[in-house]
Image (cartoon, rainbow, N blue to C red; front, side, top):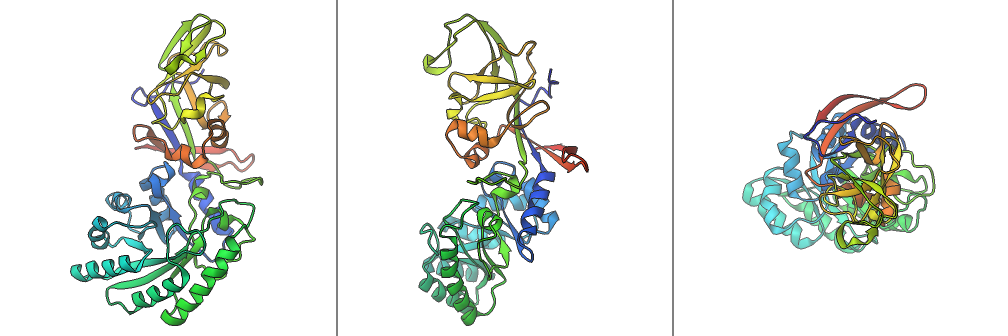
Length: 394
């Protein structure tokens, strides 16, 4: 039977920083000569932004990318010294904070460029910006002709520095180029024109995880790569073996057991009815903690190396399991929600598929009350298994 855990940890996510390090090394090896901009938005896809940023900083990443100014300030308060880039659009209320803390911003419009220049002048600072080109995603960024004009205006400004030029690919599939090379042709033309007018741009970044992994993506102007999911071993759409390690395992513990007769309705709405006398186990983990609502449709956890099916709907705080076929299951038994446990594995991909959601949505949906426990593993020389050390909790 699984060992019990510290009583204050109702649910916890073990994050392997050793896996993150090796994943970063693998993707850099696929892109020799490129610098690393690690994407850690959405609390590093649920893995914990500050510990991940510290790991990437130690590995020599030139920058990390976040979603908004609050995420950037969190990193600064966490002691992160390397540059931080807000990848998305910023709103008016963020500008003074962004400039005051030397947080890089991405520009998507001429109006935003002018507003940032005015605020930088007011503060007596020079603000570093990255100009985003809409090469075919049509979500954020400037159309090519406009982008060249704005790049030249930034270059001529006394208050802004054009530190980066970037775009965003619409194809998420790791196996196919799709329209990626078409977007690259558009971006390459913009880059050439910008360089002709403004001189070399220090950071030119187009490649996300899919493009960084795919050797058929022909990027000959990039100086940096911008992976997110690959750092955490979260697979995107692919039919090929995925070369990156899963960095997270989500676990909880059984807190209550109950024997019920056949015909017992379980959970909200009572749609699930036991077909036999059953032993039910309650775990203190629900859809606020990373177990998707759709997981009741064939979902399960692993307890003592055996499948413990989910019974009834997943609620916000609790989920009910059928442990009838797990003799000796006790309060305190560890249930692995996804990832590799001591005695079994349910992959993130399988859980997402069973739940009808994406891999990214599962990890990003792990709420704040779930403890993050950080381990640093090494791989054994013989079988590729992991040996963990240096455990810390946040």
